[in-house]
Length: 281
Length: 281
Image (cartoon, rainbow over all chains, first blue to last red; front, side):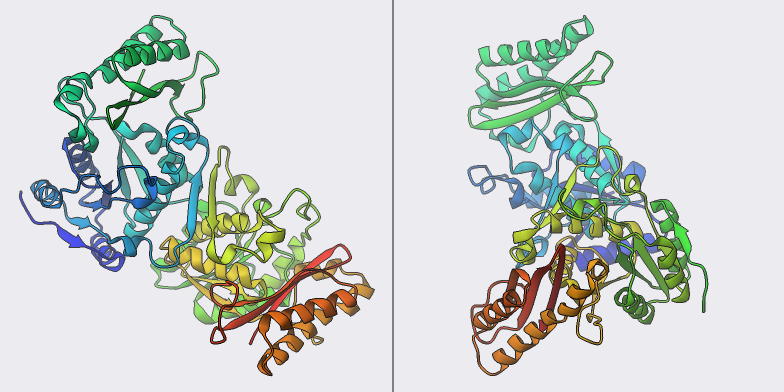
């Protein structure tokens, strides 16, 4: 079913495509990406297709979610490969705005979600969710899509976006999609391609450590203690640990009681590459 | 043409009303208010009617735009009188959400417009535009109206809201409406009813001082200097002056050159009542 997606570079073009779909009574799902697509993104595209007659994929490496010292300039850009993959998936529209289309001259609006954005990633990337919130709000409002697909891989982001949609009364429905993993358990990520062979061989230890923590909690261990053990294991194996944490699976607040749903989340460094992962219980 | 407006207290009810209008091919204009309606609001309603087949007036005293020491609790609430006025204007829908409908449990999203929100009011009410931005964004997104009417009386607010709409790619069109004044020049405001008779008699001096400054600028005086003179005059007449300023009429930035469009803005206190006004050149 290879078919070249339409490429929209301007909000007006995107809206006219989506407007045509809606006028025909078709639902539209958007998959926001920064390109450098992998099988995790393609799983989102397939889930999008299962929900809606039409699928829009946005490709925009969003500068506002990178700090000056982060990897914005070296973030992988693989346009031709991305387009081939999306054509193979039968994606209808690729929205690829220039920076000036997203953030025109004089742009000066900030969007900050507190609650689920507090702690975890924010302790290490304080600018991050502010950048994510504004670009995602804009993508939702620009596209007027009915559904938005987000991977559980970026679990805190999923919760922040879900909360923002509720708080701003946006019409779009955020659909969480399961993390896609390599056979050895490593969560797919555009940043995996930064890994040296040696680090790639080590990387599955992140998922294993989270699984071990989950098993320990199931067997009655205090979640915070289990997270601590996972952090110790990873440190001992050469990872620099930003955090391993057990949190309330919905609010991401620290746990207060035994009855709460738990999510285990981790962010670690392997060399110069920062990787995140999480699992539910 | 007295006709009782429909009262919607929930987003879902508001959307179903507006949805019916849109389905019939009718345009919808919203007039956001905090109630305590006066002829200035009614002028907005009439401008709304001139633009759109259907008019929605929202009445919501928004707690997030008041600081703890401000007049939220004593802000005038005149529901019955407001409803009579809006019935006389043939308003279609009054949207009057409860606080929990606007800010449900767990609400945690902040919206900050920099640029036009910097300085002036923000120097004295640092919380103000953040509260305005979030409630106005929500009203726009909840109502899905085509036009929004804003008075030039709150000129900085008008510019902040206009900028926010552009930055967030909202579909709504913000329509500025001229300030309505008493015969003696005092700009209409819900807070005028706080004034003692003595202060009410003094209040037109604000508009006179701005007019004198505008005349001086026309005759070649430096705008900043003219604003300073206006501030001095008001101080000498018993006003406590928060600011009188000459600013770029679009960006509200301090003036840099002679060719720029100028707006004169003032905020002063008469006793315990804070009044604002502004004029163009």
